[in-house]
Image (cartoon, rainbow, N blue to C red; front, side, top):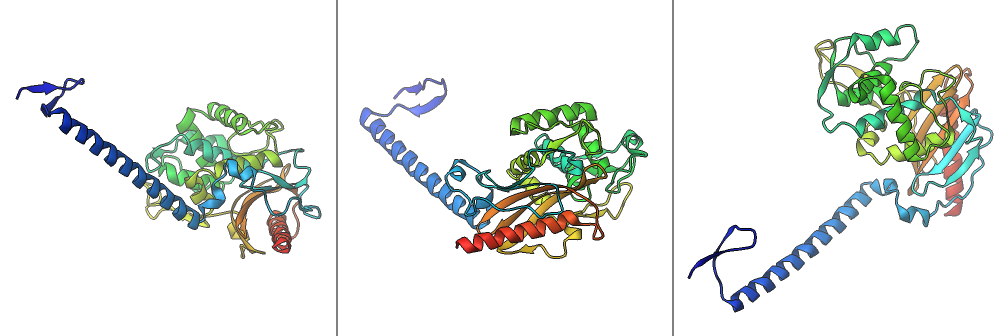
Length: 338
């Protein structure tokens, strides 16, 4: 029998009779149907696994709009903070609001945006970059918190992202900005573009660190939208839920650096009624007061709480106290509904 070629021009063996070809077509259909069924089963099993692993609380989809939170409204007055937004993470519904649309200075809550823009840019977080002297020259005299890296230090991108969120390292912010966009100014343009995409209508970023500028502003509601968006990113979740992070050795720090979450180090007990506080990003400037963007799991749902404008007091942690107070209040309200 003569050899033939299929339409693609590739050799395909010897010609079969019509009956044989029909049988092979039917067999291929059966194989395809069987494969599709297996894929569907695997997807269902994967979905069930993710559900059990607790990722269900982060699946913020269309169903969330129909599956509302058990508490529709919570009184958030009596807090140390002047601005409060309490949001159901799944549906995005606001269940507590105290001047949540009023303009605030976000301070280091800004760094949530810095981290997420960087994370969405890089595909290889284990790549190392060298921190330039210009970064530290820029920060000189600005009283900015730093993670502890030095000029000329070779640092993984991953460690810089942790350095942005946990110890609130300004040098990490500027290093990421330079690597992503070539300059802080160009990076801030990306931050503002992302803010528009997220729906942060009353936000304007001037820098990537949150250092005070009269034109660098947001609202508690917008920051809640930002955190809700960022929680879609699993790497971001890993970072912000960490109590501490240790870097590998570098050319400057052969033993590496260990830094700690500015929220968790001031929170001896993360438990609240019905659950626990999972993570958060603090902020402070004299103009902004003490701020905190956090999230917690209470019973079977996750909630986002943003507080701002808490004046310094004897404890030094009025924002942490507000988080504990308001999450406990929410847990008690949910328990009453059960």
